[in-house]
Figure 1 (cartoon, rainbow, N blue to C red):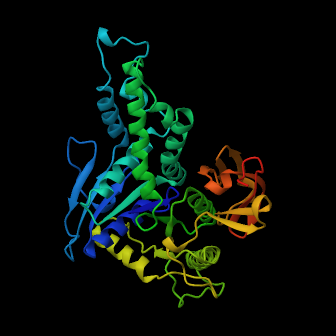
Figure 2 (cartoon, rainbow, N blue to C red):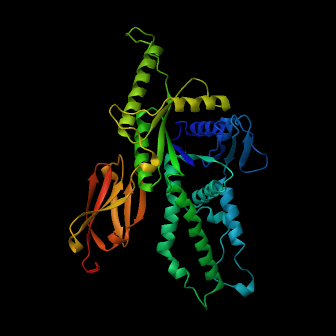
Figure 3 (cartoon, one colour):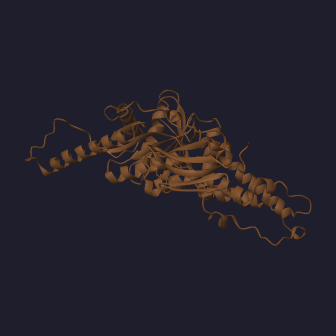
Length: 417
């Protein structure tokens, strides 16, 4: 599964559609899902919507060149959430024999809970990915900030519930407890359980990755760099970057100072865009950087999307001079614990957390019990420490290359002698 993420206006939906069309024409059964509530993927592909439904689901003709096929689903997460909540509310006992002081909110009220829609959408996408009905899922995400919030919701929900009402307290509800409380515990368990397959899917680079779409502008690239940091902190693999809308390079065009204003603009703008791509590839030596050119036509329809996908594939991976070949997403390092020195209570352990391109001014760090709270690039992650670190005290932290390194020493009061 590939999430397609990018700043609004950089052509994220277009690249998502082109990616899906390309996979289908190579023989895959593909589902293109839109989680962007500004749904426009159907218009980009030219797919009809089914009348009388909140979701658009249609098979697209002309994509089965090698036996594959493409379907699209514009998911209405609000309607999906209301349907799920209505089903849950129906489980609550009613009538005078079940009198309780708490009333059940209407589903429409619960849809306003922060993260509720995002979680409902991710749960549904995970269900579709696990169904086996498709070989590939391509997910057109909302704009960058909303996408990052979307990807953090499963961890946020699971961690928050466990802190407020831990599982061991929920399962000890026994005799004398009201049916309402038992039902509440059951619903909370179902909520937490729903996040487990989502978290597993997002954290598996062999199954899930992100294609980051960037416009060839300084502002778009700056946001893309922050997104790279945020994705590393969240723990979702970045597969590649696509710089979209690049002006075609024509070496026969020369600007000797006497060119027409339009030609002068073109030469300068094309040169600036190429410099931006070079800077981005030098900044991300471990990530493939591809380009998609602006060919003048509006990118709508299967043939144009297919040509766009071919353009991206033929561009290869742009790398800086002298840089190593980009690594696969699955091979990039993840948080790791190292024993640096000493023995027993004199040991020093280091937790290395990859934070590429991080702005040091955005880093926040704290510890609550067995968890480390890490913030960077506008997102926060609650990371449960490895068992060896839970018996340690934190003694320092700092940036070393692309890693945030947090050091620990054993706590003599709890360290085994």
